[in-house]
Length: 375
Image 1 (cartoon, helix red, strand yellow):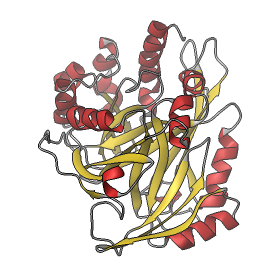
Image 2 (cartoon, helix red, strand yellow):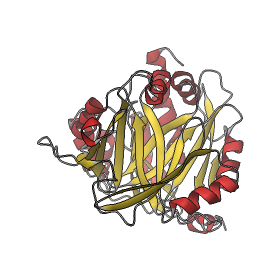
Image 3 (cartoon, rainbow, N blue to C red):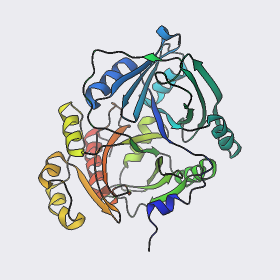
């Protein structure tokens, strides 16, 4: 009998307890406008702000929140700043995948002694509402894992920020927490990156897909899913594979100009309502699979609680594993460069990642690549 996902996760060397994702920080060209987009389109709420008005002279950061999901949107205030250089090279993208830990100093010590490249030595920040300790290491590309220890803080996000009061507060869309974040790495770099997560972070590989499982007529890729010891943090890692034409991973690497975060999967408990709300607000999703996909769905997936007609109308994908089923859908890239996008996912017991949907999903992505002239 195949081990369950819980049994696989239990095999992690959990020397680095992680409570979950603390936040995702994007480096962007215009944080004020990006914040407006994520509020309007996705229903995120204003939480905190840091900038010249709070004593930060070189950048402006807007913190948005929806339930347990925090986004930090940061822009440089001068062209010679490293943040501006990051945006010049990569476009708007994810710089920091921040992890919530009980001890950021110990997290830094444990990971660097295992070979992690330091990004930031442990730093204590304090104000009248308490203190936050952060430290950081590099992972793939220029992406950073920031360890955040906030058990002694009771203010808005962290010291240096102030509450962000806004009269414009669109309603939420039902997004609850981050299910997983996917990274794209270069040719023959996946196994090396997987080994890094095992050795440096104590993660375990809970799922693997090769180019025989993830392929279409034109392209292919390979992927391995890494998880920490309690399953709260999962990082699938993709690399391109040989195909007749350019894969989505190759397109990403070309336009992002390096390795980086491809997408974040955001959880909801009612994907029908969430996707309808997002579409009503202008969020664009990949084209729906052909009718044959939905005609075969009852036979392939079995009984589900949701109405098939509604799933078909919204273009939602469904897959089943040994522990239940899941529903998922993917946005188009949210930047002009065809790089970062989001997944909306609802799990009804399933702990897998929608392997039965790969062909339909990648064919939809390829149709978009062809329109851009990049297939």
